[in-house]
Image 1 (cartoon, one colour):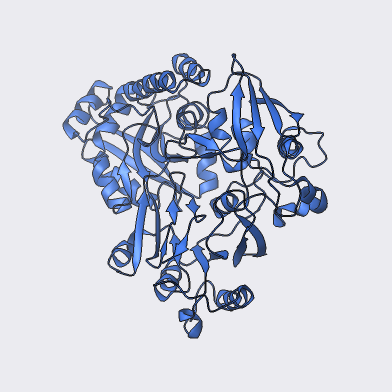
Image 2 (cartoon, rainbow, N blue to C red):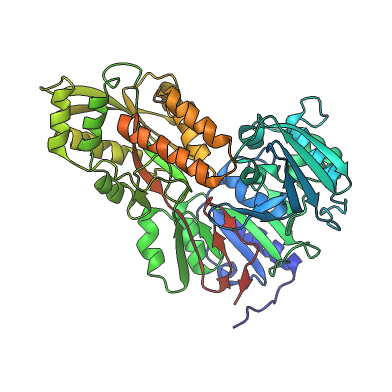
Length: 523
């Protein structure tokens, strides 16, 4: 049956604000629970945004929102992150791969009526690149800078609807990164009008227009009826903040919200058994792993690193700690990413092999080592202390005594960054592109101290070709070297999850872990 449209947009927002007053706990019963919200979608999640400026957004609470209010020159068309036209209709590349010319879509307007053109593109990138730009540095952290800050030399207007990007060197991920939210185009008029307040007055060209942000309660958007692409079929999109897990589920069950992002393991059975709900999980672009400090004893000995790797029952650890919301890892990047090496079988649980290698490493009577772990949940592991206890028990059976050292995240990360640990838990989540896992994680942030020149050279070769087959070959070789030398033990790839009402269709959970509500409609 078609969902009735009994309430006007004004009434819906007023009703929603009333519901939000009970956000975070307490009695949320009453008539509001079963009220018809019209042609409007409410999505509940645990955290709020810190900024609504795509150039400076980076946390989970804001990335979903960026894809609905803004557009990039290109957009992702599949789970492999191949791109297709968005605000640019076509593009050309120079023979040496350092110049990219984008031919822009004409007739597009920003939500404030400003014309989209080449000047808007140059403005959007210049404010992130040029330290002398009047609107440079409008946030604490720029994910754009992390992805492309060192790659782009200049951005220039060729004519009203043509833009040229000049790179410092050929850079393989360039076009892929251009589809990510941090490269989205903003209205120059709005930035000039709001200045440092733009982060809470966002204006883009996306399918939804910003309406209201009530901090720690909700962000609301209305459909852009003049959108250049497929116009949304819902009128209002509301991102509601509900920190408590049980409250989020209750609001989904009672119809106060139509979708909930990130289902904890203890709610899986209840969600899956509810015939009124649809549950989906997507293999996550992340990795949870055990980092060995190869710069000092005892783990400068590769035989000891291998002994520990054989001592740990990774599949059982994943089954116990993640309860069906993860896959056991083999390589230091997810199997959903192109270039994953499927010829590597990984370390299997083999206590006898572990004891043998322990003796060969020079510790026939056993050894005592520290395992550093953090306390709270991260996107790649929700219960790190459980995982630590399992590893401790596994290793004890093989003559390896593990002392668990527990710290809050900040202190833990500092300890590993300074290579003050023996072995420690850490992880990575990012765009599902091999460079973001293998070159960035292994060489810059793996907390192992392992960076052989062979691997440095291979990753540089991979970054210097636009041929995906060539890139794959280089990245597969890197993964083989990681397996052979064992600077780390891959443990798990955590899944992304969502549950939503059967009354809606077209809601998508992407491979990057983001919600796409652009095509939602009520049945």
